[in-house]
Length: 110
Picture 1 (cartoon, rainbow, N blue to C red):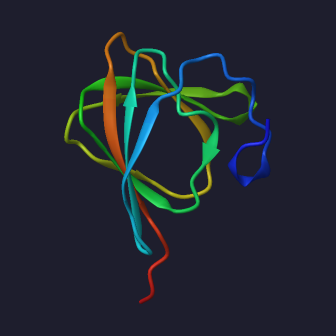
Picture 2 (spheres, one colour; picture 1 turned 60 degrees about the horizontal axis):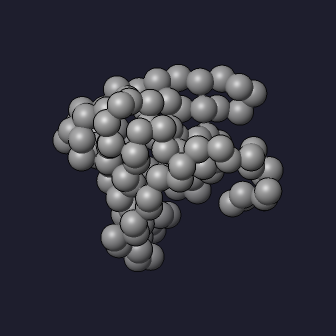
């Protein structure tokens, strides 16, 4: 299966997380992500720098190319940012639902 950006996405065996786009302008895209336990985003690559603000506490499993993984502990209201370009899959590794709001910053003049 071909994903965004033309790379091949591995076969998905997990429930998909729910993405709800709240704002999409020429400057930003704001998406709320809601995950049941074990749900995933699917493999993707961000085209822009992005900021994540957790709505709930939780634990994410981040899958990287080549089979590498890492975990991230989310704390509600504590934001973090990442640069564009890294291919990854995000999985709710906890026993409870979790949510975060992701803001992608599109290229701005200036």
